[in-house]
Image (cartoon, rainbow, N blue to C red):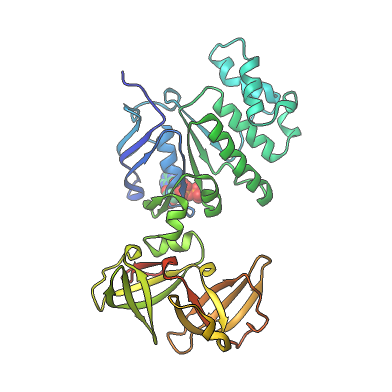
Length: 371
Ligand code: ATP
C-alpha cells in the first residue's frame, strides 16, 4: 500500500445537499508541513471542505489524497488526520495529563509519561498537568485540545475555527502560539477561519472561499497586494476602486484615464485587458495613499499617481489617521486614505492631492461587480 503523507490533495471534490451545492468541484493542494488557511464568510463551504478531508463528510464527487494514498473511502479514524474544533471537547472529569494521554491509552500504550510530558511542554502547560479543564482559561483549554490532537502524531491537523470562542486579545496570542507549535512539530495544518487577520498572521498559504468556490489562493502578501477579484480585495482589507479606461500602453506600464487625470498601472499588475478603451478598476489600499494639502501640491514627487479630492471626514486611530475623501470633480465616490503624518490642515472641507506609487496598485477587470 502506498504511504500517506502530509500532502493534502483534493481533486474535483464537491458536496451537494439535495439541490444545494455547498462546495463546487475544487482542486486544492496543501504541501506537507505548510500552514494552510481556508478563509471566507459564514456559509462559503470552508467547514464542509475541512470535514471532507477529515472523512466526517462524504464528498459528492472527487477524491481526497494524502500524499500518494487515496483516503476518500476511509473512515475518519483510519486517516492519519486529527481535528481540533472550536468547542474544546475536553473530558471534564479527567485532568489535563489524562486528557492528553487519552489517545495513547486508547491504543493500549502503557508508558505515556514522557510523551504526554513533552506534548504539555510543547503547548507550555507542563505546570498545569494535574488541573481539571475548568480550572484553566479558554486559551489554555484550547492548547490542551491541540496537545490531545497531536499526541498520536497525525500527518495533518485540521483546525475548525479553533479560536472563535476566545476574546480578541487571547485570540491574537493564540494565533502566534499555534504558528509556533506548527513550526515546531512541522506537520501540515489546515485551518478554517472567517477572520482575515487571523489567516494572514498564521498561514503560509490562504485560500479565499466564496459561494462554495476557492476564489484565489496564495501567500498572504500576494493576495493582499495582488487580488484578482473585488471580493478578494475587499475580504482582505479596505480597498479603493477607481473606475478607469485604458488610454495606451507605454513600456511596462498601462496608462489609464480616470476623470480628469492619467494614472499609471504596471502591466504585470493588471488583471484586465489592456487594449485602448478597455475598462479597468484600479485598486489602491488606503495605507498606500498619501494626502498632501492642495497648497503643497508642488511638493508631490514626480512619478507618483495623483488625483485631487476634498476631505469629508477624518478619524485619528493611533498609529495613523483615516480619511474619507470625496472627488467632486470626478465621479464623486469616496476614497479611503490613511496618513501617518498628522497634518492639522487636513480637516473636513480641505482640498487635497491624493498620491501613491504606481507599483502599489492592482488592476481588475471592470466587468465584475464591486462586492
Ligand atoms: P461557518 O463559518 O458558518 O461554519 P462555512 O463556510 O464553514 O460557514 P459550511 O458549514 O461549510 O460553511 O456550510 C456551507 C453551506 O452548506 C451552508 O450554506 C450550510 O448551510 C450548508 N450545509 C452545511 N451542512 C449541511 C447539511 N448537513 N445539510 C444541508 N446544508 C448544509
